Picture 1 (cartoon, rainbow over the protein chains, first blue to last red):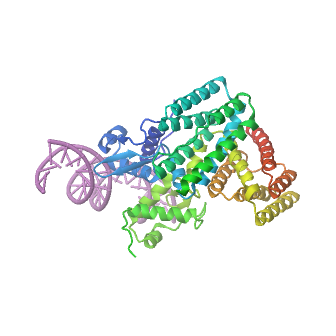
Picture 2: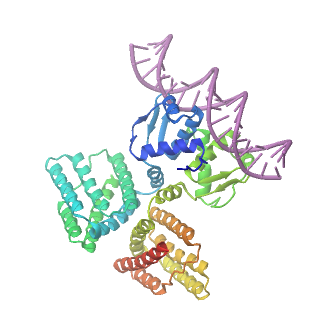
Picture 3: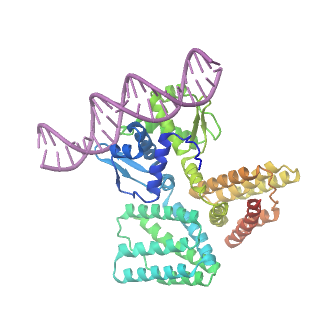
Length: 229
Length: 229
DNA sequence: CCGCATTTGTTCGTATGTATC
DNA sequence: GGATACATACGAACAAATGCG
């Protein structure tokens, strides 16, 4: 087995490896990564080389370093960081509309390709929503609701669509969270959830699309109310 | 007027400025940027500082440096570069589906918000398409066709959506271009163009959406044929 | 408050490789 | 091939921030 020669610089190689460690979840957001000395040995490079790789990732928004404290993972992917940076220049409504575009398409694709496993998982998510709603556990409810939508998008089978959707969702919820400190009371839309499930089960694209549209309207109103405060 | 202290490093400041110069179109893709000596004076920083800023941008995919030849702009924005990198791991079909999701939403929004100016510009684009088609000027035709779709998306008024759509389009066409060296003969869909224009003029969202769906089907078939070769 | 260990930030110097003319 | 300039990688020394006892 002949291996192609390494024409990439050491810095590039190290940066790429760290990037992968983060994107594959080895190091997750908020984690402190090992100190320079340790990484120097692991990657077998000099301190300067390692530091330059880290600086590149800091500039990309993936890491954050602080003197004396250490280096912390800030974002789970370069794309996520770049999107976050771009979205800062947009309004919440614009962001919501993009998320809607992705979810609409995903729901229609899900209606086409859904498997039995997908349907079962959707049912579980609805159960969780209901359970959390009955117990007035807001945080749990929001998480379950996000999971439901995420599951729909995952059923589309398009990994690029899934990634973009999840990034947009993450950014949106961070936005909302920052804006109002978690005490948002979104209405429970069990009927809507069940309608969407039914549409996907029946493989009815149009119906699925209509659901997403209704959901979007609801969300838009909520968000606009929040924004006014 | 008191100005907040600069707590960003010089490198960050320079990198940010260069980033802006590129994103605002001052320097466009393919351009050779001024030599280091010149930039050192412009930004009033040392060579090392400037070089480090450039290396950060190289890692982000915005610039490309080669010894002796100089530094060249490689991408029009960080987001574009990050997307390009991510899309490499996806199939062309997946990419097309995401672009479709964005265009579908945009077309519906365009139908709602279009101004007279938008309509006029769309008509001009169709004229250009027709003209190029009659003259068998393939390159010009493709450009005019892209312009038409871009104009539709721009009429949506959502700048985030516009940016993402343009990046996806750019990536897709670079993909196709690489794959088959420009001698692709896409069919001229004047009827479809006119139908979409009419739908937008009448502010008929559903009709606009149906058009995009048909266009997507057509494109999908073409792309799948190409991919088989 | 001090002193210390840990950890990142900064700036030198040096050796070696590599592209261009 | 030789000369020159630039890129890459390493090492070392010191500065500065943080946290702990």
